[in-house]
Amino acid sequence: MNKKLIAITLVLMLVTSGLFALDLSTLPTPTATLKATLGDYFHHGFVNGAEFEATKTVTNAFGSTAPSFDYGYETNATGPFYIKMAVSDFVNVTPNSTGTVKIKAISVSGSTPQWDNTEQKYTIFTIPASNTFTRNVTTITVTPALTTADTVDHLGETIPASETAAQAASGEYEATLTFSVSAS
Amino acid sequence: MRKLFAILLATCILLPLSAQELPRFPSASVRLVGVIQPRDLQISVYNEAGDMLTPEEAFMNFEFPALEEWDVERSLFFRYSSHLSSQRVGKLIFELTDVEMNEMNRLRTTLELTSEHRMTSVENGDTFRTTFLGGAQDDVPIGKLTVRIRKRAEDVFSAGNYSGAFSINYTEGS
Image (cartoon, rainbow over all chains, first blue to last red; front, side, top):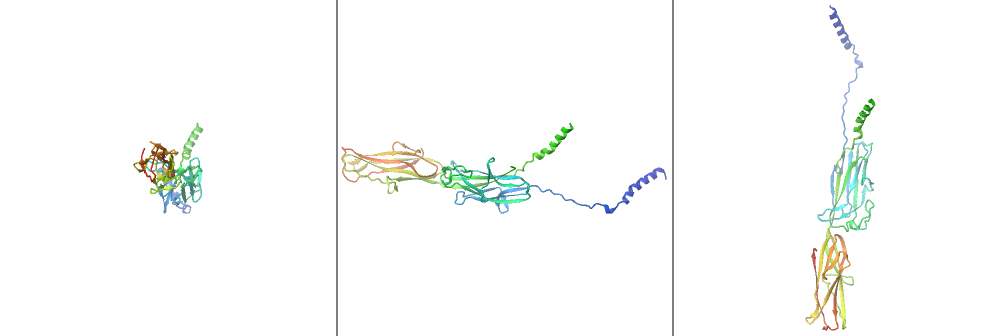
């Protein structure tokens, strides 16, 4: 045997001897890690069964019972963020007609909601930083100024008699309440 | 130089964090719809006692005194109620006949219209031109109509019942 052959044989023996020296008891346990990402979601709107609808129309707003509706949200997102409600007066939408009917009061589940003077909106819900999953629904009631005895609106401003349903021009009136989500 | 590079790198890494915004969720809106039913224009006539006259009762009684000269007058008061969607201009035009028993016995009548209501003006002496306001209006004064009958000393009339008529026409528009 020449020297080259001896050297190659030694190297092979050194390499393969490691395999035979393997201790099976020290092998790590194989683990399969399943990874999935759950994205943030946020659904809000007007309650219709289990669903939230983005738009709603409530009629007979000047009836003897103040109009109300259920609004809610469902989210797994962490806050803080806020659901706020902008409110417009009732405006006469009849062609060639003008007129306004003020809103006397707004209540959320029977209480007066917090007014954000900067944004000119009501804060309806606050989603905290610790939020995991939340589903909240509340009933919002809007009371229009129906008679001249309704002299102060929901913001504490004086209501002229001409801006009550008793004295405003006849026609169809609409008020819009818009719910939006903001970070502050 | 290294420090500057490190600061720039840190800024680049942190920038996306600070620029992170709340996802834009679509807003939801509710429309509240209410209707104020219109009530058409209704003109009411009242006598001097403040009683509202129906069309059947809308007559004026004059009693002429047994004097050589006399001047009698009776007044009617006009008001309106409505709930219009917008203001409307209308005219009440009065026409008055003389009061007579027969051709030989005819008393001249004069008509006088006055109004203190800011939305009413008197035109041609026989017309109320009124702007009927939108919104609920209840018993809003239009004006006062006075019919005057005068007898001068030289006038000679037979005793008896005299009658005449006045009519009211309503037209819309200016």
